[in-house]
Length: 550
Image 1: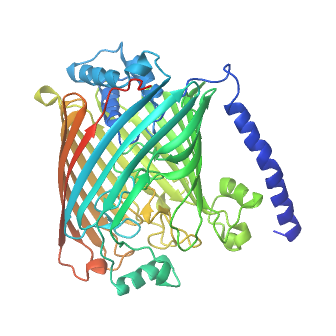
Image 2: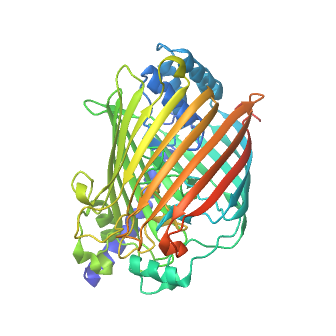
Image 3: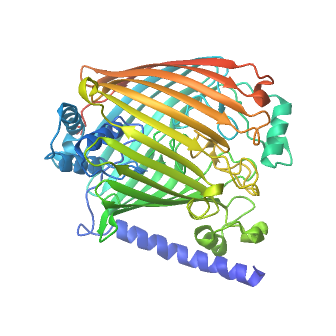
């Protein structure tokens, strides 16, 4: 780009930014004719998501978009209204009743209120050295909002609450986090990391390590306004894009929620042939990128429901900007519309960023409580369907209920595959890019799917025995293989997990769990002898009825 063209792009961007923001605020704050009642989002780690997924599988009800979470409280209410008149067995009736108690204010149109959502605490003890490097090896504790942990005692305590007033909404969730220290790998191992990731120096290399952590932390904390079919929010928010439980290929709650501006149509549009259509898009700021500081990320996802039981999603995310890549109109344009390897973008002024494309689907089979789904991911190309040999996939199967005496039992099986079959590409090419060597991470943890990581194969199974809609016993098993073409010597990670959660006195939830893990990672441990760690945890949570506290 010439100097004159660069100056023109900056001028156009600066002069257009203010009118665009003003138009957005004008729409957001427009009169009651356009506004609809604001409704806060239900956190993605809430019990309501697995309960509603099982409910829709048992009844055949048309669900909200499973591959685009979180949902608002009003979305849950609409789902429950649709499923009220459908035929139900005993398990489905219990799920319906429990969810209706949780979202009773929305079902009775009591929308304007201020309420305490929950208070909670959890203590975790880890014996042995856990994994906390999903960029190279894996994690012992995944999809936990990026909370710190290490060998020894770890704990969190927090609370959440919200206010809804006309079209406006405020949500606050904060907690105090204690994480034990985590031993650093050897300098030789870190040097190997630098070679693997194409770093010139190991001083900026991502590696699992860190001192003891004692921090108060805001988690999902945002303000928002609803207008027409849309809700716009600004603050720290967590997303889950994808139908799988083990991980979202493009976005999961494996990371601490990032500061973002987000716009989504929580009330879907109904378009002929395409069916119900939802759009989710955001701009966010990433943290602790050491090689390319001050990086940003933007993402867009569109989900379609052409039939009641079929859902498709198309996703694009881009890590871009940073100290060496300031904002220009040309760079912003390319981050949305450029595809392919784009070798010419070696020039900084042409760099479109680290682009990821994806497609996912979910299909609830007719007449039986079984759901098939898959999530796909690729680098540079707009969709893994365009280049399957260089893409990663995460398929799954969910059986919501077994017949006969096993009606309280369910089963979920998922696999993940990220080993590239394209020999022209480097090993471990997923979730990374030459110009953004910190990769697709926030504070060192993968934003996307940790099951297969950058170059691996895994499968995982979960089974729940539902004592009640909010009380269950779960067992799960994970087997993960790491390619030796990516990490010297390869590796395996095997873990078994058993947990139970049950409600006492209606509003108090107790959780207990244990997870033994076996790890073989010669590059990290210096030996092929298996290393073991055991994680145990105990949690208490108080969930009051969501009545007004004003």
